[in-house]
Length: 413
Image (cartoon, rainbow, N blue to C red; front, side, top):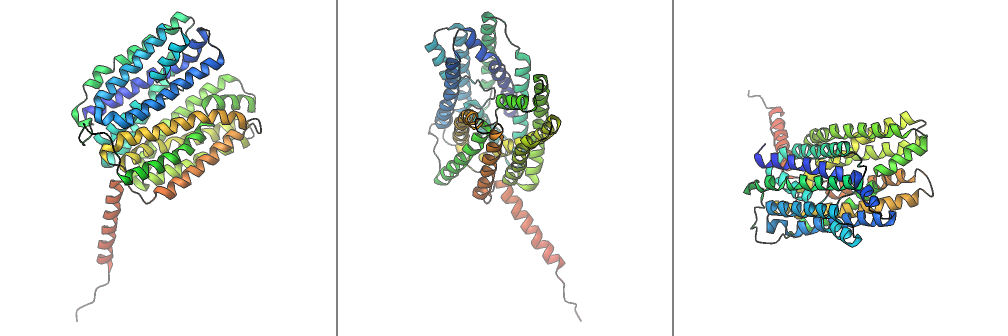
């Protein structure tokens, strides 16, 4: 593994720790400032909106500005906004800092920095090494998220909240000199002075891929962690104590799944792995409400958590493979932006659906995700990444050779 890849993997983990830790106490900090629930929701939404806009801007200009310089600038903007949030109390300043700083109250790093990471990982690990590297990258990001949530703690005073925000900013600032040490090999091979443009073929693929991704992301919005916590407690009248270990076990299942996905993709292809591991996860999800007891529901849910994330590294790897090298940052940014926007809508619809049936969100999520999987397979099953095209040609050539070798030969008299 080269030096640039090592930097990207480690910085993504540290960044995830900071973002996850902030998400634990950010809402409580806003409440300590005297904001109402509506105002807190608006501030969190403004941060998510800023993250979507930032991702779109990075998709458009990151390759022309330079990926290394973009990483540094975006990180400094996020850190500066964190410090401003720690010092300010005016509502308008808080909204502006949340938007500009792309403050992520959801806990998972899905902003412009991740889109740039994906382009760099794909460029530095071509061919068959790409999917295993994306599996490692996703694993480290999730590991960082778990560590951040675990060690964030819950501050007890307004001053402690502000110290937490300051530590968030300091952690990001510490990444700046590390990003500055990235080599020129991470930059787009295309003239860096030109703006990112898509070929007609790439444009069609991205539009189709992003459009279908909204279904998957919308389905995911129906089953946020907060909603699932509420559902398990109310459905089975269990103590809240058991929910923490449940999601910890789910995180362990997720971690194994990334590497299994890379192994499956090598043998069955990226699209097949994305689709035919995701469909079982949706089926298990829709079986959870039918479970007669909490332990059975836990077993079904953990089975779902094993299959569900297998499409993450494979999806990232596939998208990077089917566009041109200089288009990767923009492609990842656009797809991430559409997924983020759809994910935000899901919880509101889930709350509405629960007024009709308490378990409706789980069914809606499963159905939407299955529709997404089947549509994706139909649209992209014939569009193979380069390494799978080579494998297919090699297999075809080997079949021809075997056929010739096994063909009966006439005996000479």
